[in-house]
Length: 434
View: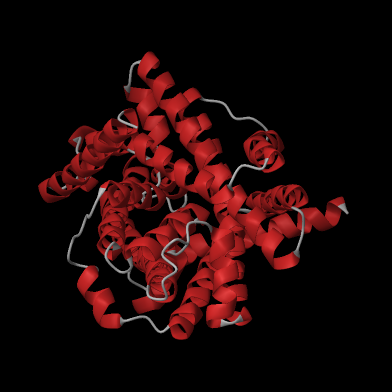
Protein backbone atom coordinates (compact mmCIF):
# COMPACT_ATOMS: atom_id res chain seq x y z
CA UNK A 1 0.00 0.00 0.00
CA UNK A 2 2.88 2.31 0.90
CA UNK A 3 4.57 1.57 -2.45
CA UNK A 4 1.34 2.35 -4.33
CA UNK A 5 1.02 5.65 -2.48
CA UNK A 6 4.65 6.49 -3.26
CA UNK A 7 4.09 5.79 -6.96
CA UNK A 8 1.01 8.04 -6.94
CA UNK A 9 2.98 10.86 -5.30
CA UNK A 10 5.82 10.49 -7.82
CA UNK A 11 3.35 10.53 -10.71
CA UNK A 12 1.72 13.68 -9.35
CA UNK A 13 5.09 15.34 -8.87
CA UNK A 14 5.94 14.46 -12.46
CA UNK A 15 2.71 16.15 -13.61
CA UNK A 16 3.66 19.21 -11.54
CA UNK A 17 7.09 19.28 -13.20
CA UNK A 18 5.43 19.12 -16.62
CA UNK A 19 3.23 22.08 -15.68
CA UNK A 20 6.27 24.12 -14.63
CA UNK A 21 8.09 23.12 -17.82
CA UNK A 22 5.09 24.13 -19.96
CA UNK A 23 4.94 27.46 -18.10
CA UNK A 24 8.63 28.05 -18.88
CA UNK A 25 7.92 27.40 -22.57
CA UNK A 26 5.08 29.94 -22.46
CA UNK A 27 7.27 32.52 -20.73
CA UNK A 28 9.98 32.04 -23.36
CA UNK A 29 7.48 32.45 -26.20
CA UNK A 30 7.70 28.86 -27.46
CA UNK A 31 3.94 28.37 -27.03
CA UNK A 32 1.24 30.88 -28.00
CA UNK A 33 -2.46 31.46 -27.45
CA UNK A 34 -4.62 29.52 -25.02
CA UNK A 35 -2.07 26.70 -24.78
CA UNK A 36 0.37 29.17 -23.28
CA UNK A 37 -2.18 30.12 -20.62
CA UNK A 38 -3.04 26.53 -19.61
CA UNK A 39 -0.15 25.89 -17.17
CA UNK A 40 -1.00 29.13 -15.34
CA UNK A 41 -4.66 28.18 -14.76
CA UNK A 42 -5.34 27.13 -11.17
CA UNK A 43 -4.71 29.71 -8.43
CA UNK A 44 -7.49 32.10 -9.48
CA UNK A 45 -10.00 29.26 -9.82
CA UNK A 46 -9.20 28.16 -6.27
CA UNK A 47 -9.62 31.75 -5.02
CA UNK A 48 -12.81 32.24 -7.07
CA UNK A 49 -14.57 29.43 -5.21
CA UNK A 50 -14.59 31.72 -2.16
CA UNK A 51 -16.75 34.10 -4.22
CA UNK A 52 -19.51 31.56 -4.85
CA UNK A 53 -19.76 30.00 -1.40
CA UNK A 54 -23.09 29.30 0.39
CA UNK A 55 -22.99 32.78 1.95
CA UNK A 56 -23.46 34.15 -1.57
CA UNK A 57 -26.48 31.90 -2.05
CA UNK A 58 -28.09 33.27 1.12
CA UNK A 59 -27.50 36.99 0.50
CA UNK A 60 -28.11 36.91 -3.26
CA UNK A 61 -31.33 34.91 -3.07
CA UNK A 62 -32.72 37.03 -0.23
CA UNK A 63 -31.78 40.23 -2.11
CA UNK A 64 -33.33 39.02 -5.38
CA UNK A 65 -36.52 37.78 -3.70
CA UNK A 66 -36.96 40.97 -1.69
CA UNK A 67 -35.91 43.66 -4.18
CA UNK A 68 -36.05 41.95 -7.56
CA UNK A 69 -33.37 42.96 -10.07
CA UNK A 70 -32.57 46.26 -8.33
CA UNK A 71 -29.47 45.09 -6.45
CA UNK A 72 -27.63 43.43 -9.33
CA UNK A 73 -25.32 46.44 -9.53
CA UNK A 74 -23.96 45.58 -6.08
CA UNK A 75 -22.73 42.23 -7.43
CA UNK A 76 -21.13 43.91 -10.45
CA UNK A 77 -19.37 46.43 -8.19
CA UNK A 78 -18.26 43.72 -5.75
CA UNK A 79 -16.95 41.56 -8.61
CA UNK A 80 -14.93 44.43 -10.05
CA UNK A 81 -13.49 44.99 -6.57
CA UNK A 82 -12.68 41.29 -6.35
CA UNK A 83 -10.90 41.21 -9.72
CA UNK A 84 -8.65 44.12 -8.79
CA UNK A 85 -7.88 42.91 -5.26
CA UNK A 86 -7.21 39.30 -6.28
CA UNK A 87 -4.91 40.53 -9.03
CA UNK A 88 -3.00 42.63 -6.49
CA UNK A 89 -2.76 39.66 -4.12
CA UNK A 90 -1.49 37.32 -6.85
CA UNK A 91 1.00 39.99 -7.93
CA UNK A 92 2.32 40.30 -4.37
CA UNK A 93 3.11 36.58 -4.26
CA UNK A 94 4.83 36.69 -7.66
CA UNK A 95 6.87 39.80 -6.89
CA UNK A 96 8.05 38.90 -3.39
CA UNK A 97 7.83 35.11 -3.11
CA UNK A 98 5.94 35.75 0.14
CA UNK A 99 2.25 35.58 1.07
CA UNK A 100 0.40 38.64 2.39
CA UNK A 101 0.35 37.29 6.00
CA UNK A 102 4.10 36.65 5.79
CA UNK A 103 4.71 40.17 4.49
CA UNK A 104 2.65 41.55 7.38
CA UNK A 105 4.72 39.55 9.90
CA UNK A 106 7.97 40.72 8.29
CA UNK A 107 7.11 44.44 8.30
CA UNK A 108 4.52 45.11 11.02
CA UNK A 109 5.04 45.49 14.78
CA UNK A 110 4.44 42.21 16.60
CA UNK A 111 1.37 43.52 18.46
CA UNK A 112 -0.28 44.58 15.19
CA UNK A 113 0.58 41.25 13.57
CA UNK A 114 -1.14 39.43 16.46
CA UNK A 115 -4.26 41.60 16.09
CA UNK A 116 -4.31 40.90 12.34
CA UNK A 117 -3.93 37.19 12.99
CA UNK A 118 -6.79 37.05 15.52
CA UNK A 119 -9.13 39.07 13.30
CA UNK A 120 -8.20 36.96 10.27
CA UNK A 121 -8.79 33.71 12.16
CA UNK A 122 -12.24 35.00 13.16
CA UNK A 123 -12.94 35.75 9.51
CA UNK A 124 -11.77 32.25 8.55
CA UNK A 125 -14.09 30.74 11.17
CA UNK A 126 -17.05 32.81 9.91
CA UNK A 127 -16.23 31.67 6.40
CA UNK A 128 -16.01 28.01 7.35
CA UNK A 129 -19.29 28.29 9.23
CA UNK A 130 -21.07 29.51 6.11
CA UNK A 131 -19.49 26.88 3.89
CA UNK A 132 -20.17 23.99 6.23
CA UNK A 133 -23.77 25.04 6.79
CA UNK A 134 -24.38 25.31 3.05
CA UNK A 135 -23.05 21.84 2.26
CA UNK A 136 -24.84 20.36 5.27
CA UNK A 137 -28.15 21.91 4.25
CA UNK A 138 -27.75 20.72 0.66
CA UNK A 139 -27.08 17.13 1.79
CA UNK A 140 -30.07 17.30 4.11
CA UNK A 141 -32.47 18.51 1.41
CA UNK A 142 -31.02 16.50 -1.47
CA UNK A 143 -30.60 13.11 0.22
CA UNK A 144 -32.69 13.44 3.39
CA UNK A 145 -29.62 12.99 5.61
CA UNK A 146 -30.14 14.42 9.12
CA UNK A 147 -28.34 17.73 9.58
CA UNK A 148 -25.93 16.49 12.25
CA UNK A 149 -24.84 13.48 10.17
CA UNK A 150 -24.61 15.69 7.07
CA UNK A 151 -22.20 17.96 8.96
CA UNK A 152 -19.92 15.03 9.78
CA UNK A 153 -20.05 13.73 6.17
CA UNK A 154 -19.12 17.20 4.90
CA UNK A 155 -16.15 17.32 7.29
CA UNK A 156 -14.85 13.92 6.19
CA UNK A 157 -15.27 14.65 2.46
CA UNK A 158 -13.51 18.02 2.64
CA UNK A 159 -10.64 16.49 4.62
CA UNK A 160 -10.19 13.77 1.99
CA UNK A 161 -10.12 16.37 -0.79
CA UNK A 162 -7.53 18.37 1.14
CA UNK A 163 -5.32 15.28 1.17
CA UNK A 164 -4.77 15.89 -2.56
CA UNK A 165 -2.29 18.60 -1.55
CA UNK A 166 0.35 15.97 -0.82
CA UNK A 167 0.33 15.12 -4.54
CA UNK A 168 1.43 18.66 -5.45
CA UNK A 169 -0.50 21.75 -6.52
CA UNK A 170 -1.96 20.46 -9.81
CA UNK A 171 -4.44 17.74 -8.68
CA UNK A 172 -6.15 20.03 -6.16
CA UNK A 173 -6.26 22.90 -8.68
CA UNK A 174 -7.98 20.64 -11.24
CA UNK A 175 -10.43 19.32 -8.64
CA UNK A 176 -11.46 22.80 -7.47
CA UNK A 177 -11.67 24.10 -11.06
CA UNK A 178 -14.04 21.20 -11.86
CA UNK A 179 -16.27 22.27 -8.96
CA UNK A 180 -16.25 25.87 -10.25
CA UNK A 181 -17.30 24.70 -13.72
CA UNK A 182 -20.05 22.52 -12.21
CA UNK A 183 -21.49 25.46 -10.27
CA UNK A 184 -21.37 27.59 -13.41
CA UNK A 185 -23.12 24.87 -15.44
CA UNK A 186 -25.85 24.56 -12.79
CA UNK A 187 -26.62 28.26 -13.00
CA UNK A 188 -26.59 28.20 -16.79
CA UNK A 189 -29.33 25.57 -16.51
CA UNK A 190 -31.16 27.68 -13.89
CA UNK A 191 -30.99 30.69 -16.22
CA UNK A 192 -32.57 28.72 -19.06
CA UNK A 193 -35.31 27.37 -16.79
CA UNK A 194 -36.14 30.59 -14.90
CA UNK A 195 -36.35 32.80 -18.05
CA UNK A 196 -35.25 36.09 -16.44
CA UNK A 197 -35.90 39.52 -17.96
CA UNK A 198 -32.57 40.30 -19.65
CA UNK A 199 -33.44 43.97 -20.20
CA UNK A 200 -33.90 44.34 -16.43
CA UNK A 201 -30.63 42.49 -15.83
CA UNK A 202 -28.76 44.84 -18.20
CA UNK A 203 -30.31 47.98 -16.68
CA UNK A 204 -29.93 47.16 -12.98
CA UNK A 205 -26.43 45.74 -13.41
CA UNK A 206 -25.15 49.27 -14.10
CA UNK A 207 -27.69 51.62 -12.44
CA UNK A 208 -27.18 51.91 -8.64
CA UNK A 209 -30.18 51.72 -6.29
CA UNK A 210 -30.45 51.69 -2.50
CA UNK A 211 -33.97 51.90 -1.18
CA UNK A 212 -33.91 51.55 2.60
CA UNK A 213 -31.92 50.31 5.57
CA UNK A 214 -32.78 46.67 4.80
CA UNK A 215 -31.42 46.92 1.26
CA UNK A 216 -28.21 48.59 2.50
CA UNK A 217 -27.73 45.85 5.08
CA UNK A 218 -28.15 43.26 2.36
CA UNK A 219 -25.74 45.20 0.14
CA UNK A 220 -23.14 45.01 2.92
CA UNK A 221 -23.83 41.28 3.17
CA UNK A 222 -23.48 40.83 -0.61
CA UNK A 223 -20.11 42.61 -0.60
CA UNK A 224 -19.04 40.60 2.45
CA UNK A 225 -20.06 37.42 0.66
CA UNK A 226 -18.34 38.40 -2.57
CA UNK A 227 -15.05 40.08 -1.63
CA UNK A 228 -13.59 37.58 0.83
CA UNK A 229 -10.76 38.35 3.30
CA UNK A 230 -9.40 34.80 3.32
CA UNK A 231 -9.29 34.69 -0.50
CA UNK A 232 -7.12 37.81 -0.54
CA UNK A 233 -4.69 36.17 1.88
CA UNK A 234 -4.77 32.82 0.07
CA UNK A 235 -4.15 34.02 -3.49
CA UNK A 236 -0.75 35.51 -2.61
CA UNK A 237 0.23 32.12 -1.18
CA UNK A 238 -0.96 30.20 -4.25
CA UNK A 239 1.29 32.20 -6.59
CA UNK A 240 4.37 32.72 -4.40
CA UNK A 241 6.19 29.46 -5.23
CA UNK A 242 4.14 28.00 -8.07
CA UNK A 243 6.15 29.26 -11.06
CA UNK A 244 9.18 30.98 -9.54
CA UNK A 245 10.42 33.92 -11.67
CA UNK A 246 14.17 34.04 -12.30
CA UNK A 247 14.33 37.72 -13.25
CA UNK A 248 12.20 40.86 -13.57
CA UNK A 249 11.15 40.07 -17.13
CA UNK A 250 9.76 36.70 -16.03
CA UNK A 251 7.89 38.39 -13.17
CA UNK A 252 6.15 40.68 -15.66
CA UNK A 253 5.23 37.81 -17.99
CA UNK A 254 3.96 35.56 -15.18
CA UNK A 255 1.87 38.44 -13.87
CA UNK A 256 0.30 38.96 -17.31
CA UNK A 257 -0.71 35.30 -17.48
CA UNK A 258 -2.03 35.53 -13.91
CA UNK A 259 -4.15 38.56 -14.81
CA UNK A 260 -5.73 36.69 -17.73
CA UNK A 261 -6.55 33.74 -15.48
CA UNK A 262 -8.10 36.03 -12.86
CA UNK A 263 -10.31 37.67 -15.49
CA UNK A 264 -11.59 34.24 -16.62
CA UNK A 265 -12.13 32.79 -13.14
CA UNK A 266 -13.68 35.92 -11.63
CA UNK A 267 -15.95 36.47 -14.64
CA UNK A 268 -17.31 32.95 -14.09
CA UNK A 269 -17.81 33.71 -10.38
CA UNK A 270 -19.50 37.00 -11.27
CA UNK A 271 -21.89 35.26 -13.66
CA UNK A 272 -22.85 32.74 -10.96
CA UNK A 273 -23.56 35.50 -8.44
CA UNK A 274 -25.62 37.47 -10.93
CA UNK A 275 -27.51 34.29 -11.84
CA UNK A 276 -28.30 33.56 -8.19
CA UNK A 277 -29.86 36.99 -7.76
CA UNK A 278 -31.71 37.30 -11.06
CA UNK A 279 -33.04 33.76 -10.70
CA UNK A 280 -34.50 34.74 -7.31
CA UNK A 281 -35.84 37.98 -8.82
CA UNK A 282 -37.41 36.18 -11.78
CA UNK A 283 -38.92 33.30 -9.81
CA UNK A 284 -39.68 34.63 -6.34
CA UNK A 285 -40.05 38.41 -6.59
CA UNK A 286 -42.22 38.46 -9.71
CA UNK A 287 -44.48 35.69 -8.38
CA UNK A 288 -45.23 37.49 -5.12
CA UNK A 289 -42.82 35.35 -3.07
CA UNK A 290 -40.69 38.29 -1.88
CA UNK A 291 -40.82 36.93 1.67
CA UNK A 292 -38.36 34.14 0.71
CA UNK A 293 -35.56 34.59 3.21
CA UNK A 294 -33.93 31.19 3.64
CA UNK A 295 -32.47 28.48 1.44
CA UNK A 296 -34.82 25.75 2.62
CA UNK A 297 -37.90 27.78 1.69
CA UNK A 298 -36.26 28.74 -1.61
CA UNK A 299 -35.79 25.05 -2.45
CA UNK A 300 -39.34 24.08 -1.48
CA UNK A 301 -40.76 27.05 -3.39
CA UNK A 302 -38.73 26.30 -6.52
CA UNK A 303 -40.27 22.83 -6.85
CA UNK A 304 -43.87 23.92 -7.57
CA UNK A 305 -42.79 27.02 -9.52
CA UNK A 306 -40.12 25.52 -11.82
CA UNK A 307 -40.27 21.78 -11.17
CA UNK A 308 -38.18 19.27 -9.25
CA UNK A 309 -35.35 19.35 -11.81
CA UNK A 310 -34.69 23.05 -11.19
CA UNK A 311 -34.84 22.51 -7.43
CA UNK A 312 -32.39 19.60 -7.64
CA UNK A 313 -29.96 21.60 -9.81
CA UNK A 314 -30.12 24.36 -7.19
CA UNK A 315 -29.16 21.89 -4.44
CA UNK A 316 -26.37 20.31 -6.51
CA UNK A 317 -24.82 23.75 -7.01
CA UNK A 318 -25.19 24.51 -3.29
CA UNK A 319 -23.53 21.20 -2.36
CA UNK A 320 -20.65 21.74 -4.81
CA UNK A 321 -20.24 25.27 -3.49
CA UNK A 322 -20.25 24.20 0.17
CA UNK A 323 -17.77 21.34 -0.21
CA UNK A 324 -15.28 23.13 -2.49
CA UNK A 325 -15.36 26.44 -0.60
CA UNK A 326 -14.86 24.62 2.69
CA UNK A 327 -11.71 23.06 1.24
CA UNK A 328 -10.49 26.49 0.14
CA UNK A 329 -11.38 28.00 3.52
CA UNK A 330 -9.28 25.40 5.35
CA UNK A 331 -6.35 26.07 3.01
CA UNK A 332 -6.66 29.78 3.74
CA UNK A 333 -6.75 29.13 7.49
CA UNK A 334 -3.44 27.29 7.27
CA UNK A 335 -1.91 30.12 5.22
CA UNK A 336 -3.14 32.72 7.73
CA UNK A 337 -1.67 30.91 10.73
CA UNK A 338 1.60 30.02 9.01
CA UNK A 339 2.03 33.56 7.73
CA UNK A 340 1.11 35.63 10.78
CA UNK A 341 2.55 33.52 13.60
CA UNK A 342 4.95 31.17 11.83
CA UNK A 343 3.50 27.80 12.71
CA UNK A 344 0.72 25.46 11.60
CA UNK A 345 -1.40 22.82 13.23
CA UNK A 346 -2.16 19.39 11.70
CA UNK A 347 -4.83 19.64 9.02
CA UNK A 348 -7.19 17.23 10.81
CA UNK A 349 -7.12 19.39 13.96
CA UNK A 350 -8.01 22.54 12.00
CA UNK A 351 -10.76 20.64 10.19
CA UNK A 352 -12.17 19.39 13.50
CA UNK A 353 -11.97 22.74 15.29
CA UNK A 354 -13.60 24.70 12.45
CA UNK A 355 -16.40 22.12 12.29
CA UNK A 356 -17.40 22.66 15.91
CA UNK A 357 -19.33 25.97 15.49
CA UNK A 358 -21.41 24.39 12.72
CA UNK A 359 -22.08 21.27 14.79
CA UNK A 360 -23.22 23.43 17.72
CA UNK A 361 -25.49 25.59 15.54
CA UNK A 362 -27.04 22.52 13.92
CA UNK A 363 -27.45 20.78 17.28
CA UNK A 364 -29.29 23.70 18.93
CA UNK A 365 -31.45 24.32 15.87
CA UNK A 366 -30.40 27.86 14.88
CA UNK A 367 -31.78 29.00 11.50
CA UNK A 368 -29.02 28.18 8.96
CA UNK A 369 -29.79 30.94 6.44
CA UNK A 370 -29.85 33.77 8.99
CA UNK A 371 -26.57 32.42 10.37
CA UNK A 372 -25.15 32.47 6.84
CA UNK A 373 -26.16 36.12 6.32
CA UNK A 374 -24.77 37.21 9.71
CA UNK A 375 -21.49 35.45 8.90
CA UNK A 376 -21.23 37.46 5.66
CA UNK A 377 -21.80 40.72 7.53
CA UNK A 378 -18.97 39.70 9.90
CA UNK A 379 -16.73 39.05 6.90
CA UNK A 380 -17.54 42.47 5.48
CA UNK A 381 -16.54 44.06 8.80
CA UNK A 382 -13.19 42.21 8.77
CA UNK A 383 -12.51 42.93 5.09
CA UNK A 384 -10.81 46.36 5.49
CA UNK A 385 -7.85 44.79 7.36
CA UNK A 386 -6.41 42.70 4.48
CA UNK A 387 -7.41 45.31 1.89
CA UNK A 388 -5.53 48.14 3.63
CA UNK A 389 -2.47 45.91 4.14
CA UNK A 390 -2.59 44.77 0.49
CA UNK A 391 -2.83 48.34 -0.85
CA UNK A 392 -0.02 49.53 1.41
CA UNK A 393 2.47 46.82 0.50
CA UNK A 394 1.75 46.54 -3.23
CA UNK A 395 2.52 50.23 -3.76
CA UNK A 396 5.97 49.98 -2.09
CA UNK A 397 8.65 50.05 -4.80
CA UNK A 398 11.35 48.53 -2.57
CA UNK A 399 9.13 45.50 -1.96
CA UNK A 400 7.40 44.99 -5.32
CA UNK A 401 10.09 46.12 -7.76
CA UNK A 402 8.87 45.98 -11.38
CA UNK A 403 5.40 44.89 -10.23
CA UNK A 404 4.76 47.93 -8.04
CA UNK A 405 1.18 49.19 -8.35
CA UNK A 406 0.51 51.83 -10.96
CA UNK A 407 -1.06 54.99 -9.54
CA UNK A 408 -4.47 54.16 -11.04
CA UNK A 409 -4.42 50.75 -9.30
CA UNK A 410 -3.68 52.33 -5.93
CA UNK A 411 -6.36 54.99 -6.44
CA UNK A 412 -9.05 52.49 -7.48
CA UNK A 413 -8.26 50.01 -4.71
CA UNK A 414 -8.23 52.86 -2.17
CA UNK A 415 -11.64 54.00 -3.45
CA UNK A 416 -12.98 50.46 -3.01
CA UNK A 417 -11.56 50.39 0.52
CA UNK A 418 -13.34 53.69 1.32
CA UNK A 419 -16.65 52.31 -0.01
CA UNK A 420 -16.33 49.16 2.09
CA UNK A 421 -15.34 51.15 5.20
CA UNK A 422 -18.27 53.53 4.65
CA UNK A 423 -20.76 50.68 4.35
CA UNK A 424 -19.32 49.05 7.46
CA UNK A 425 -19.59 52.26 9.49
CA UNK A 426 -23.22 52.59 8.40
CA UNK A 427 -23.87 48.95 9.36
CA UNK A 428 -22.37 49.42 12.85
CA UNK A 429 -24.42 52.59 13.42
CA UNK A 430 -27.63 50.83 12.33
CA UNK A 431 -26.91 47.88 14.63
CA UNK A 432 -26.23 50.21 17.58
CA UNK A 433 -29.51 52.00 16.88
CA UNK A 434 -31.29 48.63 16.88
